[in-house]
Length: 208
Length: 208
Image (cartoon, rainbow over all chains, first blue to last red; front, side):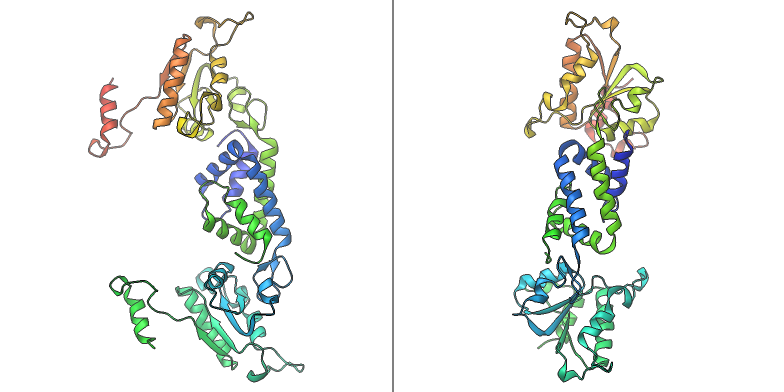
């Protein structure tokens, strides 16, 4: 592009950002170098700080700077409910509703066989061990003495999200856990005329 | 979003990239931390290296790691022609045509009074000094003894680009320089039926 290996290297590096192609990367590089060098250094420092300090919560798997995230460490949370979400962004959406006071388990992904992402890649074993802990002799605890009494599946309502929910539900139900799924139905504020048929059909089946 | 000041800081920093809003920045941050930490460090190092090593070419004003960029330093370039472009990306587009062998002057911007960008902000004085150098006693050299014999204006054909070209042309012509502008006309490969009226009108006026 221009007369500089450093600029070429920066453009190549910025292309690793999701959703950024060659033209966008070049535009970002020019903008930062021409108009906002302090922002370039700020981004560099933020990246290094985040990579060095952010890890996964040892309980719920979300991104955190501590060993256990503030949600898991909060004693006022209802520890008998565990809500399974795909990403921290989904967790944040649920938190904004103020309608859930239990704990979370963040998969950090979803089953996606076409992309080669199987149960081991999204930490399902960690979830199973959390919901169905083993006693001293390696046997699963009976349901009544487990801490988690209900697992609420809140993966996305996409093909992969539904498949992920199905696999988790099968595995946990076979181990005697109570598993529920977020309700499917007509979105609040919408008119039936404009809601897609699949959603109306589900809302009809799941009527209450 | 999640349980981390470092993550929040990274998301805020990424929002400084042009065209990146809150949702995109959060998506980028999650992607880097979850799936591609080496890329995060690569971007950080590329940013720091670029900021510390890239400066403006002392002749043509483009971004370069050297005092004089490789185009300006190339002895096979025709030094009597100077092509004025807005950005290094525009310069790269012209270079790809292989149709121009002269030198460049990169404005690194365009006149944009609405954004408060005037002649001093895009280095017009540097351009004038380059095209119309002064002799030992501070008087402008006469046209026949100047190195640059023709200035080709290749700013964009937008409102701001045309205004910039107009201002430069006025100033340089009043100093006795020969100024030309890239031809406006019908793009190669297009059918007249689908070309906008302004372009056809210009092509008609500029017919040859």
